[in-house]
Amino acid sequence: MSLMDLESAIRDIKDFPKEGIIFKDITPVLHSAPLFAEAIGHFADAYSEKRPDYIVAIESRGFIFGSALAYKLGCGIVPVRKKGKLPYKTIEERYDLEYGSAAIEIHADALKKGDKVALIDDLLATGGTSAASIKLVEKLGASIIGINFLVELCFLNGRDKIKGYPVQSLIKVK
Ligand code: AMP
Image (cartoon, rainbow, N blue to C red; front, side, top):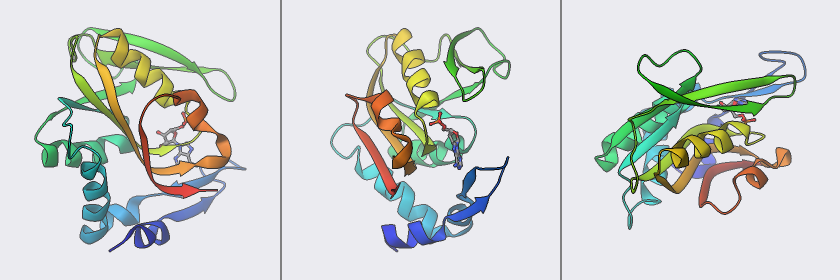
């Protein structure tokens, strides 16, 4: 299995969830044990020298990759969720969408000063979700040692919003 196999497994779904969007369907990667292992292996390689204390995983497909990576690295996982989904005390961050805004939350006691964090999601698009997640992590005093994506939509320039952080994306869509 290689990165090329991963790339060819990802399906383009036109006009989902609304017209004009080409949705990157990553479920074929999850469906195949060797492809899923290939993806998680690459993510884990990024932390061969410096292991994070926690994986911070972004709802919802980030949870899938984040859980497997946390298990492989032997660290805990912390969910970042859409507002209103986390049961305990939270802190929140708002960010702009194409129309309007959204808010995400993290448990207020999930991270502490000095914790080293790897942030993970399935896909980097405009970077708004990741930038807001970074703010949540840093508000709690933790630091980001890496950010991982399966897919990066390069034409949306999401990297500009997460400048200065080590970013790994396995598949780059030009
Ligand atoms: P953004 O904040 O624009 O970087 O959007 C990233 C989030 O939206 C990730 O959690 C992705 O799962 C999701 N997302 C955005 N665009 C797409 C797309 N074209 N295909 C699949 N997921 C997407």
